[in-house]
Image (cartoon, rainbow, N blue to C red; front, top):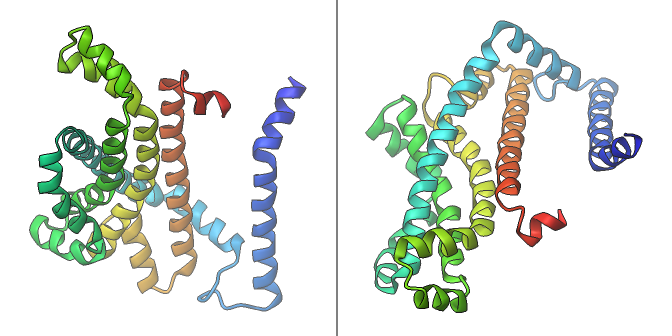
Length: 260
């Protein structure tokens, strides 16, 4: 039991100590130099604002809205990324036709597209879901495409000799082989989904953590801005952790998971 506690402290304890030290330093600098609350609120003020929003239910309301946008956009973006990544990896002709359009969509600044999504889909959740899906799509697409192209050709030949059909090849060879890269894309995509939802809310929304940041900024309530940012960080860490745990459970056989 003691050994387990020591291991956990080594894994998380130093990070927690660094965080506490940073917050204390932040508080000390603000108090020592009498920094204006508008420019930089003390860490204690941010904490008080955070707790106050929890007590009123305001924080959970906006978090729930943003979370729905994140998860919906992530699911849609992942599905499209996996589907296109697979078919483009299997067909050089389709890849040559679609790749320029996919690259063009990725290189276009998403902040520039957000107003168009707002015009097309309105101020509701739909516009945020689509901008989130667009941001999530590319890393999933790239990882899926690379994973399918990297499948061991010797194993593919064995499957052909065994007269396996396309579904059997996908289920028993291609999908398991693609999981490590695919989950690397998922972990990247879920953090980008948080960014996508906030970008959409910045442009136009009536709820959500991004909306809360814009609203608080307009009222010069910097402590609330920081509290909303903290909530976004917590949300991103939790979602990343969930993706990481699911990946570890599904890939216990993979070398990278045995090492970690």
